[in-house]
Length: 235
Image (cartoon, rainbow, N blue to C red; front, side, top):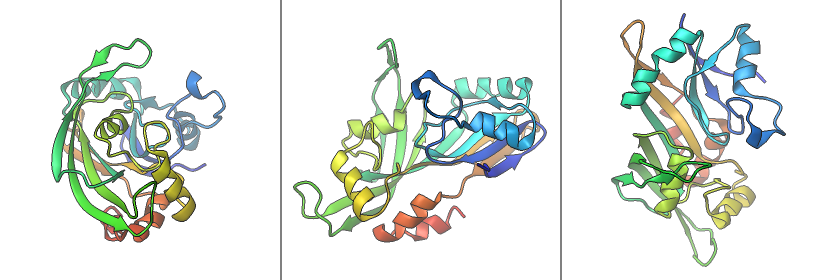
């Protein structure tokens, strides 16, 4: 598997992570044999160091350090929440035009509550003449999301808390809508994409923005939702 490289300089490299690929080896997915870290290392012929993570079913911008110093230089910005991450997602129903989700989430493993904050803005709405569950039509929102904190599955869990479930989310989503997208729209994958990452470069001090084009499963499904114009804005 060849990973699309979005950005590379002497300190960092960023890829457009495909949906379904883990960042690195973990005990919760022992059956998987390919990981972004190992694939990228083999592709460019040198070690890389993870700076942040994306869930396995999430696609989009994923950045690595090309040395330990570069990777550790990001930690101050991560702690200060000064790295701006933007995601796109398709969720069930019509969300508010914009909002802030402040809902503490339990840390995986020990059950300790952690502060979690997610900002969002609705970009568009759509309605399909397809019955789902007990409803005669199906309504969805295209939402841009800005997580202020970085908890495990934060965006997915926060929108589930609002009952605006992310389409294709098999863990926190809604099975009837997931099944409709899979069977009628030929889209079995989760619709959550990390489309940009903006930060102050720790070495050049320049404001740096990295964008990731939408993956094929997004481009294939957006026309069914009459939202195909949004795919062009990230190409």
